[in-house]
Length: 218
Image 1 (cartoon, one colour):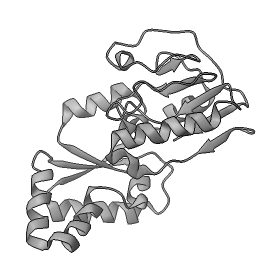
Image 2 (spheres, helix red, strand yellow):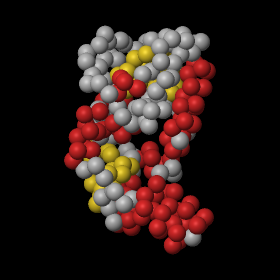
Image 3 (cartoon, helix red, strand yellow):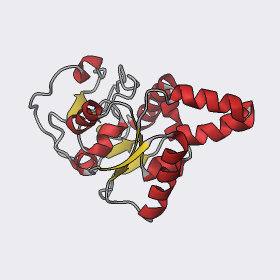
């Protein structure tokens, strides 16, 4: 992080409930708004969790991607290309595996709660449209072989084809230091983040540059 830039990390499990994620982001914005000029939200639209968020005194900045996968792949275009190439894809990264909050960990909870037979039926139902397990490599992984071994075991267990995809941290860097151009949604103080910003094709906008009075919630 740049010198003087604060950051706050929210529970990755909030993604399971967009309304809970929206509320957590709203509270994070309120905690920061009186002390910073700009707040960077390290999220995509994420099931419309960002829709309607506002700050009375700070500018809100968010990457113009549909969800966090687009951030890790480096752009909305890269994510949409993967969707067109193979829509039935479940994505994992080092961070998601380490968090212990993803579908394949949930399976173990279902086994303990419902028994192996019912858990198997539930898992098959949830995965019925998936054909590929993609591990996104950003180049910042430690002990990469261990994560690939984990993914290989999961893919084999649930009949998915494992593929390694090269991701990018370019959008993450740009999110932190700018410029906040057509790759971002920017809501000025008092403005709500509109859902329509994710529906239109991005056009060039006035760019901005990071300063020391930023805070990232992600």
